[in-house]
Length: 243
Image 1 (cartoon, one colour):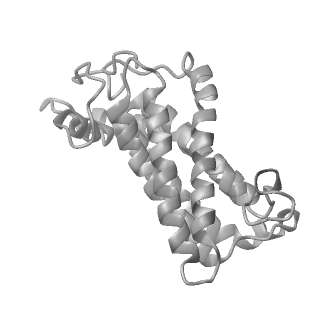
Image 2 (cartoon, one colour):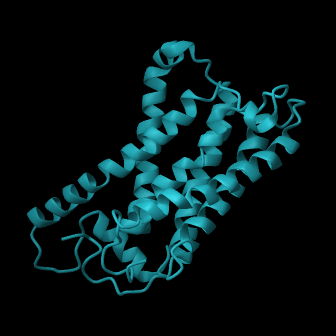
Image 3 (cartoon, one colour):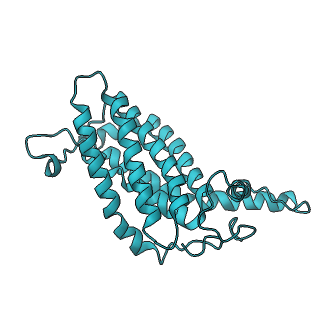
């Protein structure tokens, strides 16, 4: 039985910080309110929760890795042939929001938070371990260290805040959760990533930031199409009114 299938009332606006949401976090770790539950049952629940996160974390890692690997390819179809400041990696970053939205839709905010944190921990160690091999793969030029850290921090904060926004705006209008979460994520991503990466370098980063913000917002709107197509497959568990 899913951790969200028992004890969670049918309320589409349960958010992080709500007692029911906090209870779901406890269930994610396998801690059940029943006093008679054995340690074996708790361990099994914990293992089941961890196994349930494998596919969501892999989806997040694959989308993030694609953004990194294509970061050195200029998106001249957006900026024009004579302006190569925008990389395809930056254009692909909003795709990571889709992976988080689908997990939030299916399992709720506790799992989505765990997906983001677990994906970033695994991604960080993978990047540190295989950085040289990644650079040799197809003669890829990795971004500068400051740029990687700046966009990494911006994306992490954007994904975590998008989890909360999705949870608070999900409801009968199927598009409200993913749309508002993606728009908020685009705002946080650009407002954090660009100053952290380029402030003080003499780059025209403020203009680039606003252009990228509009691109990320447009990508969030476009990603409603695959989200809508996947809704029949990724259906929410009981407790979310089918939203």
